[in-house]
Amino acid sequence: MGSAASPPRALDAATQEDLKRVSAHRAVDMVGSGMTLGLGTGSTAAHALDRLGALLRTGALRAVAGVPTSLKTEAHAARVGIPMLALADAAEIHLSIDGADEVDPDLNLVKGRGGSLLREKMIEGAGARFVVIVDESKLVPRLGCTGSVPVEVVPFGSAYTLGLIRKVFDKLPGFHARLRTVKSKAGDGQEELFLTDNGNHIVEMFFEDGIHGNLRDISDSLLRITGVVEHGMFLGMATKVIVAKKDGTVAVLSKK
Image 1 (cartoon, rainbow, N blue to C red):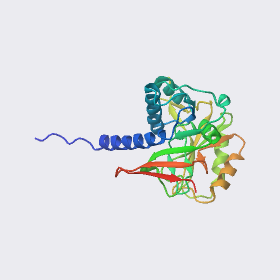
Image 2: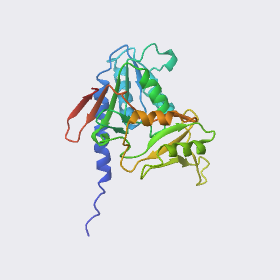
Image 3: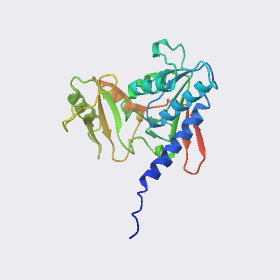
Image 4: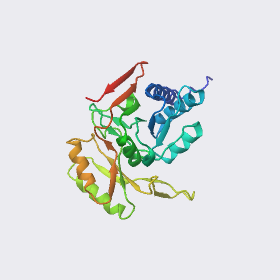
């Protein structure tokens, strides 16, 4: 009897991880000594942190500091030896490097499915340049095609705020929204509301066929809701998007 075939998913995951590493390293090539960087959050950004740390340790880069977009990134940067600054102490952020959950043809992004959208938007919006690192699976015809669009909301009345968010899209077929939950830290098998690094909750918005309509109008409608802190649509913020492709090539898309 022959041995069972190995499942292909591990190979697929490794291939995607390689693509993430390629795009991250290409972005780090843009970093020069003396720069202050916005340090992104997520699995792709982690490769950039590792590369920056290695270059600092060998002396190939000097006097580089980073402003972390999450507590997780802060811990990772400390572990690999990247000096850090608070946002208020950074005289200038020369370049931010981060991944994205989705990239549309106009280089608008969905970010923050990991829950770090507010700090990401604050830091990446404060910088001179924002380079996004992705593999080609993140390219979409319109935002909201592949998963949730997150909205950070204050804990007080979060269920009420969820209802107000639903009303923005109440005539849109296939739309639904929910508060994100995670397994309880008590280990009792129950679920509890997810908390961001800022102590807020996340509403996850789902669209059957992506977001149609004017994105800036939709953004304004969400931000006018009292209780909404920020959303995960990053509109017009990316200056470049580095896309690692399965055929081994790398495309660099620039803001029009």
